[in-house]
Length: 356
Image (cartoon, rainbow, N blue to C red):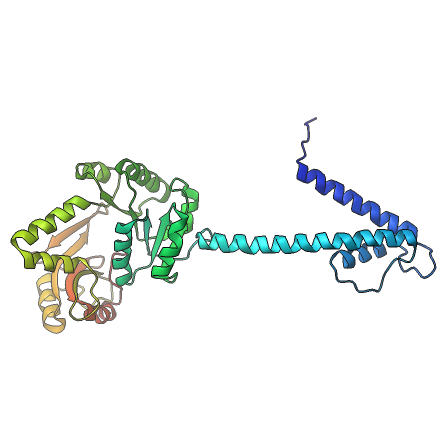
């Protein structure tokens, strides 16, 4: 027969239940048949103990004998402990709930959002741009101290924060990664990024992954591991600096195009999915180019087409006749005031949409 081991807490609970039952039996025995007593059965004693321990105190049932009153005093004193226990448990539950919500452990219902794993100044700059482009972002960090600064900067309408160990993939579900459009790995070490990316692919399938590398020589390795897009911080910076040295105006323009456009004086590059509602569906690329420039002052600079293997081919300002088809992306330079009209015209929001 297996040995049953009881913890100290369980022993105390069992002893308390035993003492409670013993008091009920003693109260019933002392009061039954006494002159003026209304406690004639175990159910009467149970009722008296409940209204006493919960501090309700209806006064409809009460002990009249000396022994019964002594037991009643025990219930009265016990009610203080029960009330204190209830209040402490309720308070603890509310505190735990608030803490879980603050740490993101209750999860988010964001969909088609961006998940950023790893928080630092660079990630903050990325989120600034994403918020400017009206994207929802889930930030995963392993540092609880990041919560308040992030919430103060962005609020909780468009940004969700999850605090967890990066290796706890079960908790990562709280960021709703399975329904995210893109996951950006912003961890410190390239090896850690590679291992994390492989595990994410195993856990969440074909989710788009973006990685910023410290060592640009590892790009092929990450692409082989299934990472969708890789960049090198040094590579980006060096290209901008080199461009500024001999073409300063081009460099300024390039930096502006990398940001999010808001006003009519701001420009950036945007991509829009072609759906069955697109007015340019079936037209030639060159014809669409002329129409967008003439009617909207928007410059079409490329088209992205989905290949049979699921990959995408980017055609930069193609010369040949290219028909616009469902599932293509039109890539355009436009000012900030053009996004809303084009969104209405195309019937779809700007940006990449998974499985398109």
